[in-house]
Length: 250
Image 1: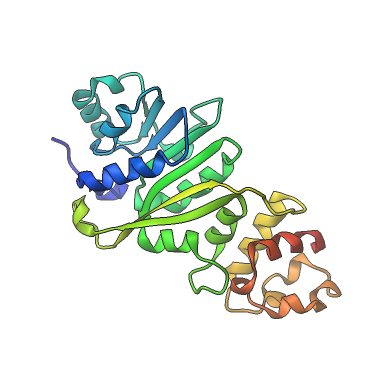
Image 2: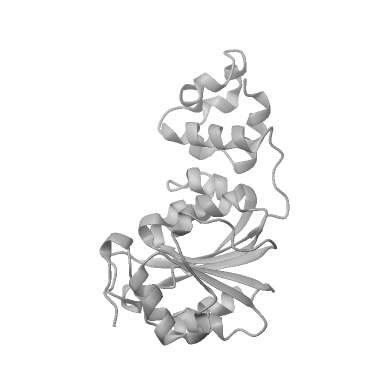
């Protein structure tokens, strides 16, 4: 058997129904190439390996889990990448889909990596800590709406699919979980540049209790800061509001 490493945020799925529901959520959109992040003990992997006609790969940092997977699923021999996902290169030249019961301690970083690869990512179906899933899906005016919400929603449609009880995992985490699906946005809002958009969103939310005027003072001229939109706080602005404001930045 394998051991569980708290340092890697490992909580392994054991509920077969949840695994099947994740596969169903994946099959909602057609795909040819599939990357699983953090297969761990392989609960989901065995279903993914069985999908017909799919170019499947998985990426796992933990050497013990890599060896376990190779023993249990010989078909994975040429499909497993023993590497840190956050330091990895794109696994395919062509567009691909991502799935995973993501390690909770790096789930936000995984989403930022997905944003780096957004031009190649067709769909993401991922299990997150419930609070993170809610944050990604939150709309303006919601108290958990923040940097992740705006940056992800600018480029992807977010669907909050279903919640998963602690008992579905070994060991049971101390937090609830939820599965969300990301698909490319039909229309990305116009922005001056992605770099300025990211800077504005991060700067605005870094002092989220302040009026936007005070939080982003260094990014606009004093004249521009007189606009009434700066009377709001960052959490009150829509994704499109942030995108439009990039055209007024210094």
